[in-house]
Image 1 (cartoon, one colour):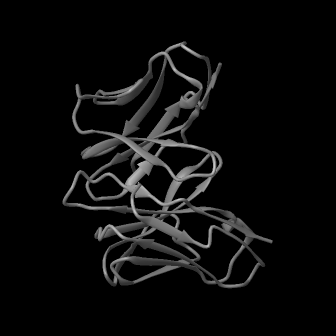
Image 2: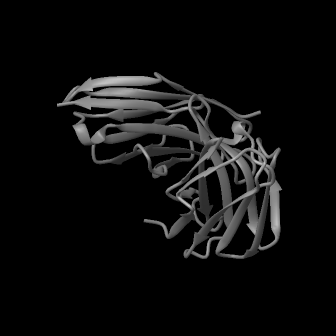
Length: 109
Length: 113
């Protein structure tokens, strides 16, 4: 059974204070690892897909990296608008995704 | 934004009543999914569809059924709602010919009293 664990559960940052979120996974035959952002009361918003170890993707202040066992989402110099819950998901042999419980990031001005 | 709508957006119903949630897409994507989201559990797959009239169960399918008679519509039915089905329900779509990422609708908040 695919397992996805995200840590920490919650992260409080000062504006400009860079940090990283972790997503560790156990899956047979990884097809892709996905990062989503979710704002309160809304559906998850797709951010990145990573396919193989060593791959990196960037979008504004966010950078996602992938190893064989985990992925990191780095937030560089965060702003209050980066406050959200960040979800990680893995896809194995079929098209279904297995999600972690998420990390809630709060950035204070 | 991906063209996905869900209806209703909010619903309160009583235990034992049937409830149907609708997901409508304008992207012509082949795959559609229903998830529920509960605190501490993340998103859990209820059912999914890989084409018209082709559906399969996810990890938390008990008490739920689905139907897909058109590419654009995917219905989730709670046959006899229970308080444990109080949750936020999300529909998602994906195109297996693309990069397999799923795009989510805005969600339906269901409360069973």
